[in-house]
Length: 166
Image (cartoon, rainbow, N blue to C red; front, top):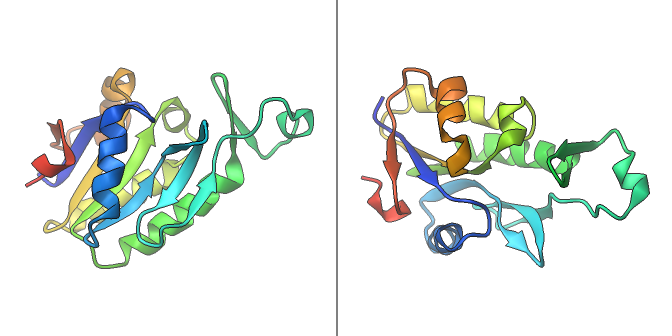
């Protein structure tokens, strides 16, 4: 395929923050970012600029016991936020872009929830859209499992910076 790229970064790290800055300044980039804002993980639609909080407050016991929460390690994440981001990603995939990004691949996706549906749609689009580029931001510790579960034999290139994408 040759149009799949992986960027290894943890949410909120300096490399992730720099990538988010680059995305904001380019109309040719679409997708979903996961910035940390005021100490909480959020989802950011690159095309519309909309931001939705992903991380729930662990001290709200009503939320903790809700069926609409995904528990991922020490984090509680709103399932509705992921549904919103997946819908936004689908809409963005139908738009004009040169680079599409799914940020924040973590154990949540590796366990079959979170942005899983969007990941599959991005990979399908990448298989038929050879002129467009697709970037997955993966936590370094999840690289091997992400590659095995999602990419299989698909060729990909690891980049150190979003500007390295050819």
